[in-house]
Amino acid sequence: MNILKLTEECFEREVLKADKPVLVDFYADWCGPCRMMSPIIDEIAEEKQDVIKVGKVNVDENQELAIKYDVSSIPTIMIFRNGIPVKTFIGVTDKTEILENL
Amino acid sequence: MYDVIIIGAGPAGVSASLYTQRANLKTLIIYYGKSSLQKAENIENYYGFEHGISGKDLYELGIRQAQNIGVEVKGQEVVNVEQLINEDARFRVTTVEGKYESKALIFAMGNEKNRPKIKGIERFEGKGVSYCAVCDGFFYRNKDVVVLGSGNYAISEVNELINVVKSVAILTNGESSPEFRADNVKIETKPIEEITGKDRVEEVRFKDGTTLKTSGVFVAQGVAGSLDLAKKLGVITKNNNIVVNENMETNMQGLYACGDCVGGLLQVSKAVGDGAKAGMEAIKFIRKIHNS
Image (cartoon, rainbow over all chains, first blue to last red; front, side, top):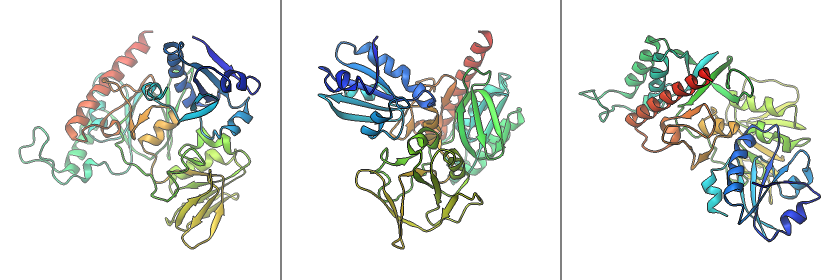
């Protein structure tokens, strides 16, 4: 399982120019609900490693990314395709609901 | 500390408590407000009552039955629930009167929704409208926000925000002003017409035509319901119900949900069955942590 630690520096290369869809989890260490989202993201990364990339953005350390993508509630999960966020889930979300949208 | 805290004193919560208390687990039921059961005039489709029974009577009998076997029952409004990490207790429930801790927690508080019917609320969800101060306050640092509500739950949300944001005002939307005074918190009782903005919340427009600029609207109307508390913990919900498996387990270890708050048939018989399952699973869980 390979979950990318996404930062402002690498976001363009790893997400916007990726050749596969990218699932991005915006989170913070102090956020209880984010801890509940984490194992779900891990499972998806494991199951779908051939078809998507999965990464996490720590919003404390990467506030510009949170502002750019208008994140005002965490966890927020976004699916990027060809550099564009095509689907957003706000709050802890069921695995099947995310998988249906990949 | 309690072994099990159950929020809700309707058929699901009481049924769960009968199992946990009889398994010698120290059990507390906390409830507030009116159960949907109490509102049912006569229940004729529930087992064992030849002439039916009024919802009010069945509800009261249930609570007395729990009390008779030693379950503690407190009528207190719950304003927050937290998961504790690296402590003996795994959950802390805060009411307007105190804090209570337990190893397992059961949600059985029904499915009352307190979503205000104000134009713009739904449109701006996640774009300035929030249902959880502790989760989202961070994004409103140095910004002006409002809390929509007038009760203890609204005040609890204000207290979460007060040290994070630039300013917070309480908007009661026509309800009477809460008994809450803080120098830096304005209270506005005028009825609201609409929440407006371009891509995000920018303004609250009142029915008298006046407006208030704001970056965020935190919704905390009425009493904290099952969905509000689930959201604070990170419990998965879908279509306004808490998601559980066949054993009433949520995605959080030690937390179970049963009765109307998990959806399905909104009937006493189903709530009682759900409660029994949740109670039995909580017993298994606590025995497992005691033996580990």
